Length: 323
Ligand SMILES: Cc1ncc(COP(=O)(O)O)c(C=O)c1O
Image (cartoon, rainbow, N blue to C red):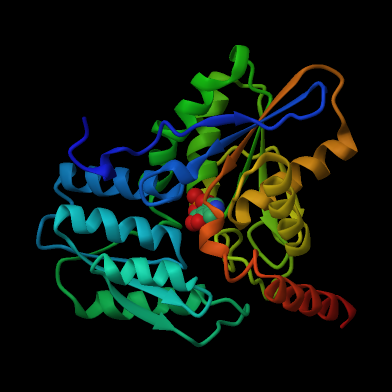
């Protein structure tokens, strides 16, 4: 028996996505089975426990972080559980349901409305945090983009699970969406230890600068970034697949129709990337591909699953390609 639902982090289901008989065996790790609904529970749970155990923070410490959604939701739940004050810096792209959950779980919310030079909000969110830190005592900035504990969380949990659960102990590819870089850094390090020949494929969206592409306005949160996270310097990445937001939204619909999976944006991006990658390279033998599906569709009910919103994004992206 558990004392609290928040203790049930990890050990999420792994499901097979194969409908056709093929040598390509695709599996999805359903991270929305984590207590607050996303892969970010793993980072929030592990980081706060490690910091408390090491004495780097105490019950009087204020935790501050910039998050456009899932990490904010996870941190607000785990800081509340630990009795810590939490300030979450969010922005105009934050999904209303995430903002509601963050506030309901007792966090103070600071809302950034001014876009940065790349058209996103991240740089201005970070600027705000630096201002607050400089005037507040006993405050800890989680800093998911640089904090090695973020990657360690995934090395110890998700990376381990993927290795243990690989069917017939064969792991050929892992596809993951990238934002702070914590998931891919931790998972890639663990997977390469156990399966040195496994290929780690980073999935990013057009408009994100993480892998050197040009910055452009992006609508779907949870994947991509307007900076290259430092944490990625420790990742082992064999290839990068860029997908656009149209492909992401189509793939979300396809997953619902074919597999009854109602997933969030980055899961659609990952599935789109798998299809794109293997439509070019194909496979010549039985190949196990693991995908990380980071969150669930409910949080995207007014966006990806709203036909009017989809039309708006399609029209915007089509127009910006013409310019
Ligand atoms: C929906 C979703 N997918 C993927 C990711 C990427 O995870 P990471 O920040 O570890 O790169 C996040 C991170 O917030 C997310 O919310």
